[in-house]
Length: 302
Image (tube, rainbow, N blue to C red; front, side, top):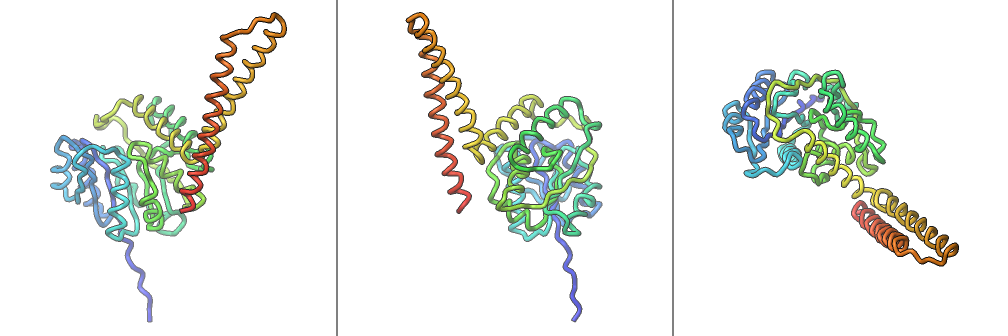
């Protein structure tokens, strides 16, 4: 009896917030090229005509009703892919920056079972300077302690196979723009160990003025969220470590206090207050780091 290879069912999911200007052309290009079997637009509470335009272009639409963040839209996409039995998921932005014609090269490592998660890699030459700087910082922070070899952790153009979809669905917690970093860190977790690779892509900047957030505040917000994610995963290192340094600073001021008292008999209140402050805060930090470390290990054991 001859075996017949089943056709891979692929979903393209587009998280959207007020992308009425570009979403129609993105959906139509996906539909015409037939690189995927279904196009899903996850509307994150848009106040413009995003839903109407996406629906008219032929996309399936899931709407949050209110703005909950890109991370929530990505998690909705993963849930939809699991519930509808898709074998692969392509995530791309709805502002026209990502070229649907590059979907085949994103899916190629997945089709030959060489990767579970494929991330688009943007060369620095195609990015504005401020984006290069922000990406460099976020790439380094994302890779801290994760052993990640990803060099473009913030790119939203990525593809996942069924294994990655099922393992990541329900594992991600962030609702904001740090979802890309969280996905990378979750994929490199020792309990998942997903195979990650990158493929070069072209990204268009400036065609559509659809950004809903100042790039500086956006970058700072993502950085703050990613640092919080790191501290959450390895609290003893990233909370306990700095707290131990505070204790050492406290001891330094304490030694200065004792030295001054031995030399002059003068008991310095400023040195006393500084030593006490740093030692108390540092001790509390170490204690919190130890407690959170235990909690983190218990959560990972579930």
